[in-house]
Length: 235
Image 1 (tube, rainbow, N blue to C red):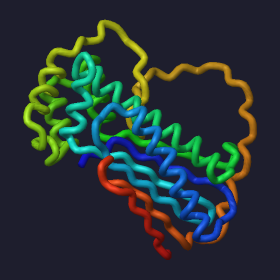
Image 2 (image 1 turned 120 degrees about the horizontal axis):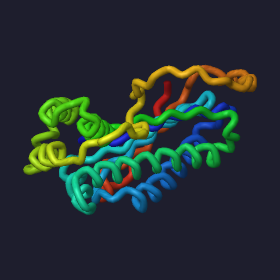
Image 3 (image 1 turned 180 degrees about the vertical axis):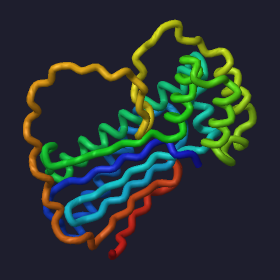
Image 4 (image 1 turned 45 degrees about the vertical axis):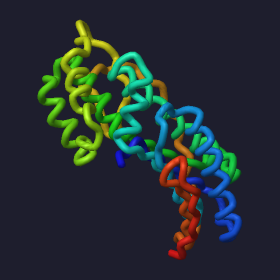
């Protein structure tokens, strides 16, 4: 199973009773799952949502086997476009999840913080960009892709061959272009320019996160065809 993306959020809201935390977490999972089903064009995937109280701290993950990812990529004109499109779809589901978390737990955006991190497709997309920019050769990119995919790389016949062909045949950039953000922690090496800056508004104080964590609700579905599981863990 490959990681497609992870979302983390912290909502500075009061703790809720165990039954209510379970109900709200399950409701958030159902909303997220419905959106993923409509937005992500791969035939099967796993979903996992973990919510802890005291305020509310959540982690959500999407995963898929390489065969399902390969089928999804095949829906598009070429390998590069498929990787880029599905990665953007996963990113959109992350945005939707954090918006719905604020609504479900009645938390204003000003009292929430979120972070999303790309998974395996984000890594591949970044490798395509680096090859197109001339920072890596296709052979070097394949070594990094093989390391990133691990044992899953051999889980679908033809996947790595198609990836190698795409890296060798993707168009090269002829001039500097702006590159989107793909992975958490990626930064571009740009020349420093001193520009006038307007005074920054004062940041609001950090939200009070309440007492130590006591409960964790986990909701997951191992695949679209398997039933949803829910459990409560006492911390």
